[in-house]
Figure 1: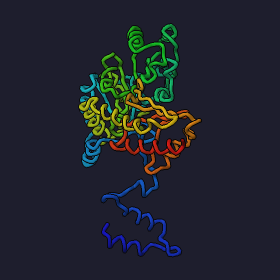
Figure 2: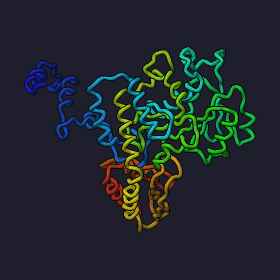
Figure 3: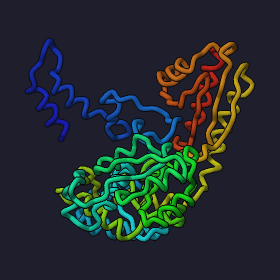
Figure 4: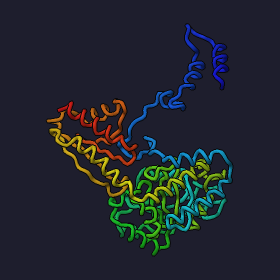
Length: 403
């Protein structure tokens, strides 16, 4: 809209007490720009922050790389057929990850659900239309997993109508296997919460000719995990496309055996009479994920030194403060990146974790951390380089004020 047309339009809007109406105010707000572009967060009053906590969905995951954003902009300007695009991109992802086949999904949860659907229905579209109603269909009805692996995300499996059977140890696993068993599922992030490891789990599944699936949604880095589970022999592998890969946060991908990927796609959008119709993923997300994955593999673990340096910057700023200790560690599974834990003695540092969290959150800029008991943890791998210096300064200020 031209400026003179905007002004002309505003003169026709009703006034109340000399104040522009809500509609007029919204029109004026829409013209606010920052660097030539609208600052929509400020316009809408949405708080933004430095993320020191991790790639958490309710915190919008991670930030896409510039080349991914460029891909989204370019691909939004042309049309193509979704199935053809999935065929071509899936083949490339499979090649990159040592899988027979792959498909892009709307997140790792979607990969879990579509993978489960494919195991149940095969290529039978009539069966796919029946899900999640399994009774009387001839489809199998049970999924076996270790007790320590039964978490909320497994709703993706039960959405397909199956019942989860929990086991603890090899003996219980062998007893639980029956003609009803459709799948044996493994949660990599909770590997240590079960008595059966990957190799033994897969060996037992193969002995009984039962398909296997592993959820490794947040388990990169290391980059090698992208093909580790395919090489181990899992039939299906589910991964997030956001998080450390830094593709669109609403993307994910399902890798595995060719027949099972084809079966999963029978229940996937754009087909309209299946449980996967709402798990829509469009051309921009498919290609954005592909470019992000290419970049992630190409870069390898070269960012590791940057993350270590960022953590060291934070640690240097809190060292020497009375009552404060710190340690640097790498979680063994999900968010496997350099992380710092900062602890303080409440008898010396008069500050609760909740107070620290609120002080950082309400500061300018706002900062989010992972709280503990008289402690906090911070990861930097999802920060914009340079933000770690701001975090280091703010932590030191808050701790010193409380001594």
